[in-house]
View 1 (cartoon, rainbow, N blue to C red):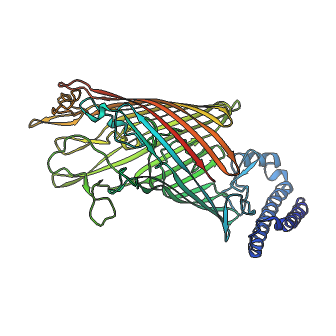
View 2: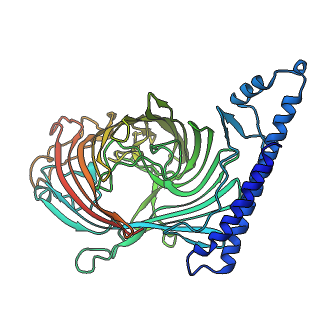
View 3: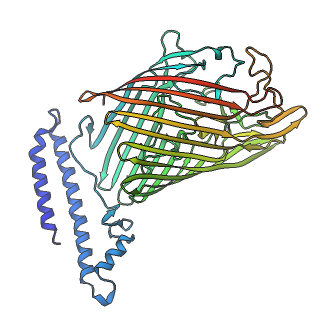
Length: 546
């Protein structure tokens, strides 16, 4: 109980200072809002006093115990370091080193933060930016600032022999974060982020350039600091996406590219999911998620084989799109480790994905299991100056999780879905030249294995079947067949981001990116192995008002 008078004195002084400082709160804050803040601060201090009393009581009992009854205080502390409960009210709280992990620090109840809005205990923080970007391509893709890397045109395509230039404001974003602390150990939040890269059937660039808003992220979270648990429900990055630290939401390690499709070799998706993460310690986290499934396919389909269907009218999907037949969610599990080695921050993670491919053939429903795993490592090679990263994945049926969007499956003549073996690899470096200037470089690839499933009745089955014809791929305007199943998509890219202005009126940033991409198809008896290249330059001016 020795620290209780000091803590109570501190609590009283803090309340007095808060009361004296209340007059400095924004001029438009009401008296009721100020009283609510004072009450919230008092509740926090009361909770802290109660927690201190419990710790003092537990220590006094340990020191008073006879030596013959068990280990002394030093041994007791050693057991606590190894993970014994330290809080009777919250038995799951653990101690690591000298830190009581899960029992604090308590959420702070303070005046409304600058550039945020507060209402009834909730804090709303707006975000986003306004962007004007350009893209220049060596070969026309009829694409905006997100490049379909697996569709770089072969020489057969007349339009592909022309260059391409576009202005775009569509990557501009609107975001908002709502947060609240119903008690000292619980933190609730909701986050939404939207851009304009959606395109309804009426969207075009003829006159009004009216492109529609689309969801990037829309989810809610509940965090318990005493147990180190984090629950998420909604749409956001897949748990398979690499992170910069732990498994903390909004701490994903997304490539710095202007290109909205990022870099081949980057493992990612944004999709609805439920997720649970536990912080085992400050440097070790584990998580699991169940995520929205979808199957992509390439190859000849046997008669009566069904794995997808056109959207049903009135079903809230675009009627021109097809949806795969889904039987079970994709399951993702991940572990992250964040040590500091010789002054260098290191982030290491490993994940696994389980997938189910659902179809019907010959009057029967069929399930085929696929999936794989991967990982990543990020190292502060020169602290605050140079960061290095390496990531990748390997498995069967992982195509939709790769930037190049190679297919998940192909189908045999007997109506069996065959997951395609694929691997992805990405290496990157970020150089923080000054506090306002960053340079980045990435090199990545995605590659599928050949899955030749024979020829039946003159029809070639599988993916990369050598009997497919690539005869017309390299002849401009040819009407000959160009099957050209993608084998490899690879890219090298680099760029910079410069903060032109940062101050009370927000931030103005400028970006430049250049890239070179290669697309290579499987070889065939007719036409060989066609390939295509694409050089791009993108620029960006972004204003962040918040």
